[in-house]
Amino acid sequence: MAEKKTILIVDDEEGILLLYREEFEDEGYQVIPALNGEQALEHFSANLPDLVILDINMPGMSGIEVLRQMKEQQPDVPVILSSAYPEFKEDIGTWASEEYIVKSANMDELKASVRKYLE
Amino acid sequence: MPELRKDPILGRWIIIAKERSKRPTDFVVEEPQTQGGFCPLCPDNEKTTPDEVLVYGRSANRPPNTSGWKLRVVPNKYPALVIEGEMDKQAEGLYDRMNGIGAHEVVIESPHHEDRFTYLPHEQMILTFRAFRDRIRDLSQDKRFSYVMVFKNYGKAAGASLEHSHSQLVALPILPRMLVTELDGSLSYFKYKDRCVFCDIIRQEIQQDIRLVCENDQFVTLAPFAPRTPFEMWIMPRRHHSSYMDQDDTSLAALTDIFSETLRRLDACIPGVPYNFVLHTQPLRSEPLQHYHWHFEIVPKLTSIAGFEWGTGFYINPMPPEDTCRYLREIEL
Image (cartoon, rainbow over all chains, first blue to last red; front, side, top):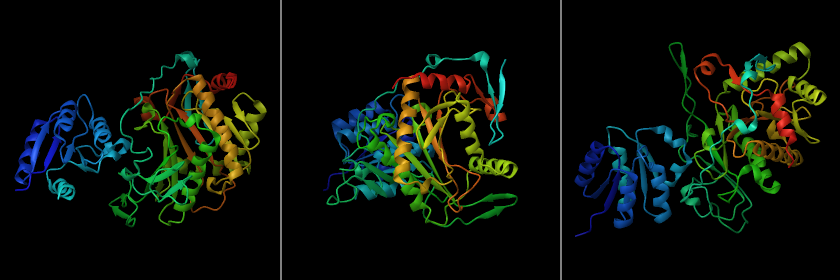
């Protein structure tokens, strides 16, 4: 039986984390949740996920700073930025990510992106 | 006594708040923080950027989108406007709308992450001015575009999101409001005086010599009579030209020299000062204009814009330009 691909999901909103976890576990992935940048980097180093879904606007370490450190460690792990705010696209630091998806109620775009990189 | 001053081109009034008069050392500038970690603009990370549209310095036997370059221009990975499609201009009652068509590009000014534009050697800095010219020429071939806005943000306070030295250009399907106002104002002056207002400003400032920061045989740097911010400066060609994209390499070499001197004087006065600069040039579809003169505007980010400024369009500036000019000229480089 093929090993499940792992997705590290980083978001400071517990409701979002719970929703994303349910959706992606239903899709057959293993999900590692993280509530902030520090937790995310700990899990990233310890578990090396196959893909990261990363919020940007978080207290403490911003998603862009987390992205920068992740890419410094393991540039080949795809990172999808997922933010409620399209204006962060102006930050060239976001370019280190593979995609930038604006959060919406419809998760089809996010799911399609995940499939693109993991299947 | 505070003073109201009027910009002779835009007709914009500003307030010189002399009673709040400052010295360069009064401005508190946040020390730039060095960002560690991955930088998408650095060499060997070319695969994180879109494919380049212009490159200088890479040897011909190396493939595109690899390292070895001296300057590189790439489309913005997450652009504000998109290049595909048509404008599809529409009316919604009395309102106007169209598709967000445009080109948004980033000029990566140096391969070295820690380089600051102000201190680039001449042979590196000139590449940026060539890139502006060459990209405007190329984008002017696309008939959908009316104008190319070239700008640079340096420092977090001025909107720079990444410390790796870069500037940006945005091709637009419409003329920006500020440019239209500048064109209208200069045309109005020309109709009245039969002379270019910018040429007249240059002549007067050279003759008065109280707002002339520095000069060379082809360019002058002025502190404008009615500046929006302390240490605002304009760099203009002495001879009348309305189009930046027609400048030859000799002109760009002289521009590089004066730009470098101007920025180094500014940084010597207020180390690490964040700033923006913008290029103002004629519209893409225009014949050479007798009434308009291309120029760069350098606007340090030293004051904040609050309700009064937003509501009125007035700027409040605590430093007369004659004082800033004197401080800038006193610097020994």
